Image (cartoon, rainbow, N blue to C red; front, side, top):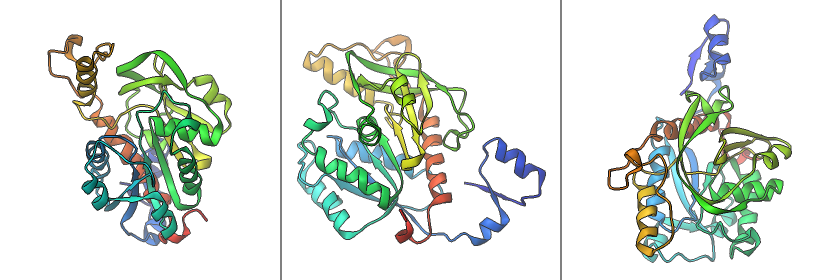
Length: 307
């Protein structure tokens, strides 16, 4: 949350340059407060697990947030009870027809990264979602495959298949310590990575208006800002729980799928030992900073979003 200071106080300029959340007395006096409306377009098969992960991060802020769960209109899930989907989720077509607007929208990953985007069964509707965000969402956060799909749709930056799974906890470099999205971040941070594809640094840098905020020399770019589209793209899973990589590893071992032990995840890389969560604090920082930027920029009247 921002601290309110007089604009002529020396600390105002000092803290502003350091990236601390500062608000002038004049701006604070004009500020109207209302609950923030967030949407979660959940493309993951384990819907409830994903709901918990993102709700935990969104709920850590002192701001009041109303979370709406959204699904693709025609796509059916086999991993979550139909009763749960019927009770808690709205199809995107219904959301769009109602003219709903959101302060923030998260578009999750999906286990379909081996497919070309155009071969995904709901790709046409997802393109409509991406375009709809420009007039109905203040800020959008594309996660893993969701981020790859967004950056491809808006900028033509393609994902590339790898011959092995990038799997584990990789130490990423903070390229933009002055970014409001990285307030409080260390010079480097651990991020869980679990993907068979990569986004290439040179191709992202060649696209106008994109800024790589954190990346790793080995696993590649992780967090990208797209200011023109009011969007962030993260190609990894900083929202994961402590045991999520273990679940993926155990699943693949049980299925006989060739898989490496997730690196830097288990103590001494020994999968018989309990894993450690070394990214939790940065996950809360990232989503808290994103929420704060939305809070400070979103209009009080939801109808004014996108105008």
